[in-house]
Amino acid sequence: MSHAAADRYAWTEPKVEDLGGGVHRIPLPLPLDGLKGVNVYAITDPGGVDLIDAGMAIIAARERLTESLRQLGYGLGDVRNFFVTHIHIDHYSLAMELRREFRSLISLGEDERANMIATREMINGTGGHRVFGADSLRRLGAAELTGELPMLERQGPMFTNWEDPDRWVADGTDLDLRTRTLRAVHTPGHTRGHLVYHDAASEIMFAGDHVLPHITPSIGFEPAGNRMALRDYLSSLARTLALPDARLLPAHGPVTGSTHERVNELLAHHDLRLAETHQAVLAGHATPFEVAKSIKWTRRQRLFDELDLFSQVMSVNETAAHLEVLLVRGQVTREISPEGADLYHVPAGQR
Ligand SMILES: [Zn+2]
Image (cartoon, rainbow, N blue to C red):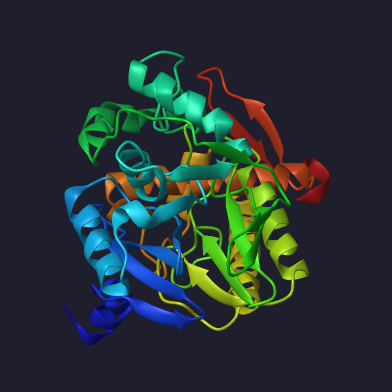
């Protein structure tokens, strides 16, 4: 590994980081290709621990969490609450597993209900929900990737028993912990029910995957699907800027000094991507798949064909989200091809 790469993943090293005021960052391992770890944040007091996010239900993560809590003087049975930011497996599944053995309570944003239902339907093979369904690929104009779907579905760990949280949390709820109050702020986009937990008094933001320091969060990658995911996400970023600035405590990546600074970078990134997407449609690329193939990806400006299959599907999904924002803004129109693909065009008067 190069020095740059080593530094990039330094935050995943197995050690507990003391952030002051009884807050600790505990990085847990992930068996996913792109993401090497997920941060769980422990908020401690003499009576017990509350955790922000839970990590993935794999043995390595459970062992790391056990050992990290032990270093802080607690056991798994001392965890009172899991305040989970969103329903993705790397944040939610270990909470479900531990709740079966201990009496911890799980809280999750109420708008994740649709994803919970869709996840169960996906696992039972009913309802037609598929994050990578053949239907959605056809709509994106990427029917040629359909043949590769079985490969994608074999990738990644599965978790089968998806259970509701104890509490569905509404936007604006104040959560009274023993040492502080967290405000749950609905920040849809990454998923439709994503919450950040803001502690205005201590000037810290548990940001989940809403704001990440090194990568741009994926948009609308969720079983229930959300065509308006990017519009929602941009609104959520604006909403975050309207809150007082705070240290950024992300789910993936190191803690940084300013949430606002990173939000402004993310807004600039999406402005640029929207402009590139608009240009690609002007140049005659019509489906999300065609547009995705015509633009460069990742911070290394890679060609679409150089991406692995998973990243290609994510990129096409991402492109569709940008096209839908251009549609809402009146910069493109949408029609459906005889094959069922979405076709975007720049209106005649705007060319
Ligand atoms: Zn995540």
